[in-house]
Length: 612
Image (cartoon, rainbow, N blue to C red):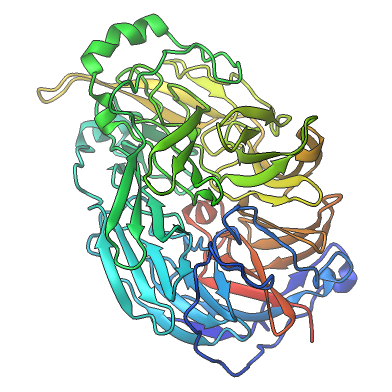
């Protein structure tokens, strides 16, 4: 893995206040020590200056009590150092920082340990993938650190443990072969689609940072809910994405737990329910919204498709939250397969499109809340859930919240899944849950969200959640590839950008302490990405695909500081302290959609601090 740390003299900081702009910083060099073996990132209380796990702790709030950088001085924030991975693009990792050492995974599942004060490389691990047949780009969203080991789940279907002091491989567990069970063939559709690059992508691998809890390393697979599609560098919509091919072209999603010391699998939970995955053929969502389903047609088709659950999808995108007192983990599940085409999977398709609670020791299901039964639009429950104490008339309730692609934040009782509250809408809805049609159905939101996989920061002190919200619609069109070569016709759904519909992003503050009202919403200059970070300094950090990292006033949403990182922000920002000095770090690598939108890709982890 090629890497280097350098100054940012060529880069510029830009601010709404012209008097603050045009300054750069020199690289700070310091002596470096190898880290001692860290204890469990989730199970041990860490100094407030660490960022010891994804989300900072098992509550997944992406909030830090650090306040050295605040509303009054953030305009002086400058680059301290930069680490370049040597691999351009799809850099989405959230770093972990423990006792002055930063651990970060890169594109291609390589890992580096860095001195968190200077950026000096302590060790690197170069990953050698066992197959090139992976789902999507080779992105990875972070590692976990516990018990002197660094854990990573890889795109080629492995869970590995590295020695935290040296980077030496301690154990390597092959969890799944990505190409195993693959059944798609692109040739059947290529001619009818004008020879666009049709590809199959029902390959299983890992993107999420692992959760370490109760001596277990817990991860879930992505890629289960997809079939054939047209590759499109503009985010999967502008050129038309062929998804939802009629038939059994998906995989079965699952979450598994591995012994942190040995790598042995302890339990596995499958997203699709083997008996009764059709559910109750409900006509409305659990919160009362009409689904516009043809229940009679689904029930008539059910006998022919009794085993659709075996390839029923349900990817798992992001790290669960964990309540140690209840012994429960909370995670969101993805769309059923075939995506956007429900005729060959009649019923509610349990437990896809759900927030679920599992017993951490056994993996058994405690409860589920299905946001969209029989889903056909790509509304994965993707953004990581976060824990909070939700105020009610009878006092605070221990709750779990999830910001959805549908455009609401849902709040549930942690113990039983009861829906306690639902925020005000974060977007303008249009034809919600109206199914795809031959003439094309325009629906808002489209498959990119409202809130996609990007983490939402939550400040318990103010009761506000801060979400990157995408506003936009998609056109869902049912099409047919004619019979040819001894096969019958094939129906599929094409998802495309809804022409003439507004498309933009907002950073939106939701006041969960006041019934879920929108406190403020600020329109961004480009599409927001990576997720948010809130701090006790009264700040919210948020990245854009055009390369800007922004610092907002948490009370008003005003942008107080901006920095152009040179490539789209791909991962969630984090903050930490070393020797009493506070830093903010973010991955700036961009992705295929940033390149397609005219913005650059890169390979930089950029770290900021106030001048000494």
